[in-house]
Structure formats: C-alpha cells, structure tokens
Amino acid sequence: MDKTLPTVTAGTPAERLRTLLAVTESLTLRTPLHRAGLVGRHTVAADGRLRLALPARAAVARNLLDLGETPALVDLTDLAPLPVRDRVRARATLTGWLALDDLDGGEVTALLDLASAELVDPDGDASVDPDALADARPDPLARYEAELLRHLHRHPDAMRRLSRRAVVDLGGHARAVHPLRLDRYGIVLRLELPTHHRDVRIAFDSPATGPREATAHLVRLTGAHLSCVTSHP
Image 1: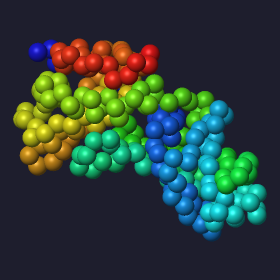
Image 2 (image 1 turned 180 degrees about the vertical axis):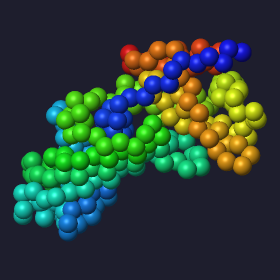
Image 3 (image 1 turned 120 degrees about the vertical axis):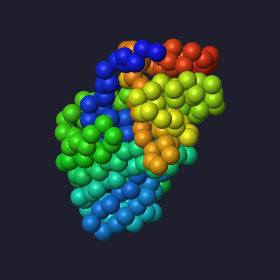
Image 4 (image 1 turned 30 degrees about the horizontal axis):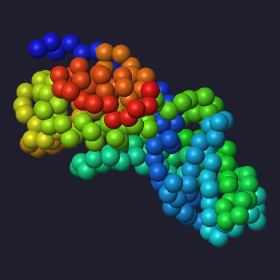
C-alpha cells in the first residue's frame, strides 16, 4: 500500500469560524444584565456581522429596545453529528456591541458589531480579525457535512477500508472507527484505541468544491460505491 498522502491543508481561521457560524444551530448570548440560549435564531449578514432574532418578550430583547445597543458576548460550540466520545469539535467566543436593527411583530433583530473573536479547534487555536471574518466564506461542504458523515457511517465496508488507511502508521488496530469531520480538504476519523482515542485526517487529492466531488473522493479512498447524498451541484 502506498503510504504517501497529500499534504494536509486546513482552511484559514476566519474560514473555519465562518463555517462554524453557518452550521451551528445554537449559541449562548450574554450581556451585562442577561443571558439567553438561542436555537435557530442566528444568521450571518452579507457584511459578516452576526444577526440575531430575539423574541420581543425576552429580557435581553426588552433591554436592547430600551438601550439601543449593549456590550455582548456570544459562545458557540460545534458537536460531532455522530455519537462519539468527546463530541465537541470546536468552540468560539465572539465579543462586541449588539445593536438594535429592527422590530418586526414578535421579534427583535439585532446585529453584533464584532470587536474580537477566538476560535478553538483541532486545526489550531486562533484569534480571528473581524475584517477577515467579514471577507471569509464557509467551507463548501458545511451544509452537507452531517448528512455525508451519516451516509458514510452506514457503509461498514467503506469505513473498514478508511480504518485500514488511518491505522497504517499506528502499529495497532482500532476497536472502533467513526467519521468525525469532513471539509473540502479531507475527512477526519475518530479511532477508538485500547487505551485512548485519536483523530486522524485523510486528505483528498484535491479540494472538493461540493458534495459530488467529496463523494467522488471518498469513493476513491474506499473503493466502495457511495451514492451522492444530494442532487445539488
């Protein structure tokens, strides 16, 4: 077996944080007076600012209506889509000024003018410049990652072949292997070893531009037939 693999490459910290903002459903918002857990209530504006839709009756929204703006801190946590030990894949903290943008019926829309952002993930802890975040775009597989990983996990033959590639340099056998992360540069596997777990990245020959290319890369890596999980290009 040829052990030569392509050079591992990761997106920039700004791209990784923008991806995290795009795929994470929940976040925690803190202001000097209030704390709120929000689910499915954030988007990223075209200029890179975080947009929050707050229930008008929530204490943090009423406070924002009174003041117009307030210092704010946002925490996000990214969890693996499959049930593995230590599911946390990344954390981020954003600080800045939360400003009232609009009041529409039962919701208050607010925008976070970013002052600082900190990202903690396996590709390296980093401070992200607000301007860099505004210019960054999410990984092209971000919307499809969870579905692709679950799809791959349902193919035990493909997982066994990936497992053999991943453990070739470990000098042992993994008790279990789970797909943990997927981006345009490759796939990361969680290897459950006898005494610990280890995450191993297998790089693609070239970056994938979408789910079809990612599926094609996985087919080449596993030699298994994997249907594309989406009809989107």
